[in-house]
Length: 81
Length: 183
Image (cartoon, chains in turn cyan, green):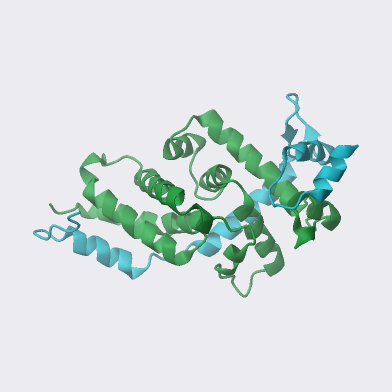
């Protein structure tokens, strides 16, 4: 059917609506017809997500501690915008 | 006005996660640091509206998200990064088991609609409850749940996961779904 071709011809990124039909082929359907991901898949995604986030976590750069101290100095009005 | 040191400490304690959230929103470490800095300044300027004992991280995340949103509306084009140069800004640890897998993941994440991405990160990585995430995003809990679900489903598509034991994507399928074949 024409739907398949349209997907193939699609050139911009992003997931089109019609992809829903593909989701339901590879995952179980819930009662509402929405794709329900298996627990293991959800766990896998969760694990990847946390691994990604963890790489972004660093000790707060000193500049933020300095900033808070500077802005907070009594008598120093700090940001006056 | 001198800031209670416990308040200052709780602000500082929230910064690493706040900063990670900012990087994942805007995909750029320098801009993320600017966002964090502005967030802290706003927070201090409005510290009277913060109730001690309530959730400092959620309060700061809310401020940062609002700042990002208003900036995003002005600079929309710079934020979208479908090619995943986004991922290039991320450091990976040498001991990272699979750099490729990591990069694929961060690229896929960058392709999610912003609403879905932030909901997924808040709940799945920043450690907020659905309720807190709803508060941060100013929407209903059900909306957050549905965004998280859609985000997960879309990641599954983008990553080509169709079997929990096979994380390797089915390339032809993924190419069709993501448009990678036209690169």
